[in-house]
Length: 363
Image 1 (tube, rainbow, N blue to C red):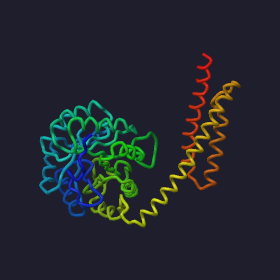
Image 2 (tube, one colour):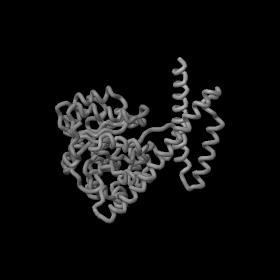
Image 3 (cartoon, one colour):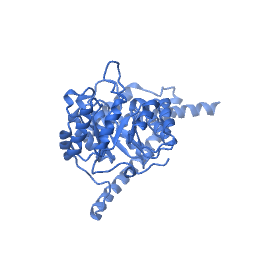
Image 4 (tube, one colour):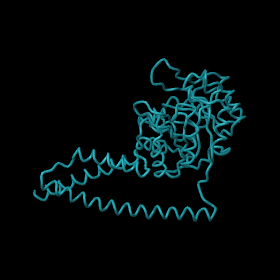
C-alpha cells in the first residue's frame, strides 16, 4: 500500500496539526464566521463541517445538504482547505463536483464494506486525500478493510481518524478510546497518519484537553476538534463543541513532546531503562514457560483422575488473592484482573489440548 506523507497534501501550519470547524454546517454566516475566527485564533490546517449528518433517529438535524458545499467554497476563498464527510457514492460525487479539498468517511459508513466500496469506486482516477474514521465498534479488521478499499481505488493521500468506539451502557466518554486499537493500526501501517478526534471520544468539551494530550503523547499526527461560533445554539453535538477562542486556549495548554531523542545523555538514560525492561520481560517469559509446564502437568493429572478442567471455586480464589496482592504491591487491580483473565484463558486452552492429545493417543 502506497501512502503519501501528510505534508504532501496538508498544509502543516504548526504543532499540533489541527482540523477544526463545526459539527454541522447550519447557515452561511455560521460557517464563514467560525472559519474567520479559527483563522484568527488558531493555526488551523483544515476546516471541517458536516454537510450530511447521519443521525441515529429521524427528525434530528441531518445536515443542510448540497447547499452547504457552496458555503465551503466561501471558506476556501479565505485561504483555508476544506473537508466534509461522505457516506455514499452520491455524496462523494457532489463533494468532488464542488471542489472539497479532503473527504472523510465516517464511523457509521466504515462499518459497511458495500458503502465504502461504492465510495472507492467513485474515487478511482481521482487525486484527493481521504481520511477514514474507525468503525463504531472496536473492530480493527473493518477499519483496515475500509482503508484498503480506498487505497485499492488508487488513493495514496490517506489518513485514519481515531474517534473512539461505542460501548453499551453509561461511561465517562461518549465513545471509549480503546487506545490499543490505533496503536495496533500504526504497528500494521506505520506510514499511515493517524489523527485523533477528541470531540467524538469525549462528547463533552471539558474532557477534550486530557484526551487530546494523550493522543499527542502516543504520537498521533494531529487533532480534529469541533468548533462552533456559538455552541449553545448548535443544531447537533452542542456539548462537545468549543468556541474558536476556547479552542485557542486549549491548544496553548497542550504539551508537545518529541518523538525522538537527540540529546546523547537523555538517550543513554532511556537505553538503560529500556535494557532494564528487556531483562524483566525475559524473566517474565521464563516464568510463563514454567507456568505452562505446570499447567500441562495439571491437565494430565485431571485427565487421569476424571477431574473437570474448569474449577469455579479455584478461579474465584485466584481473582480474589491476586487482586489483594496487587493492591498490597501498589498495582492496578483492574490491570492485574485483566492479566489473570488472559492467563486463565490460556490455562484452559492448554489443559484442553492436553486432554484431547490423550484421547488421540488412545484412538
